[in-house]
Figure 1 (cartoon, rainbow, N blue to C red):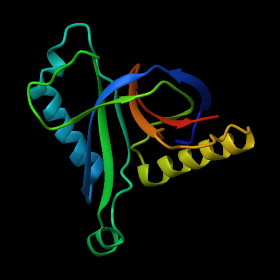
Figure 2 (tube, rainbow, N blue to C red; figure 1 turned 90 degrees about the horizontal axis):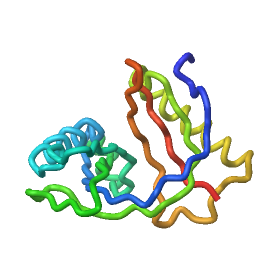
Figure 3 (cartoon, rainbow, N blue to C red; figure 1 turned 45 degrees about the vertical axis):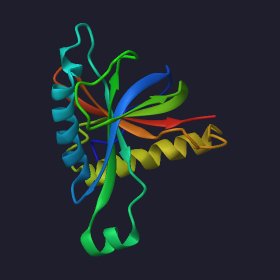
Length: 165
């Protein structure tokens, strides 16, 4: 498959303040993305000079078996990085801090083409890399595995982040 990962790198992300929102629906990535886009505009975040938020997301695990089986629902969290002193002009997202951490990062090219195959294959490859490299974290408590859509030079990528060590 041509959309498989091109490289894995190790990065250190600084402590960052985020605005986040979880959502459960049949298409949670799309639905929560729309909600957070609207929130970012209304909150004043996008009016901050010299600030461009990063947008991360991850699967929201608090979905019941009944929601999954009877209704085909899934959960997803979308978060925008925000300045440390940012106070939103409206409600609609929870403000939190994500601590500094070290990650193995895998980049997928054109991740939305056959996303149902490409993204899980990417996560599988990243997990295998972590296991084979003895990089598995002792705990994932209060640590996040997440995805970030990146636009560079006219291309769309998805970076998959997994905490290590």
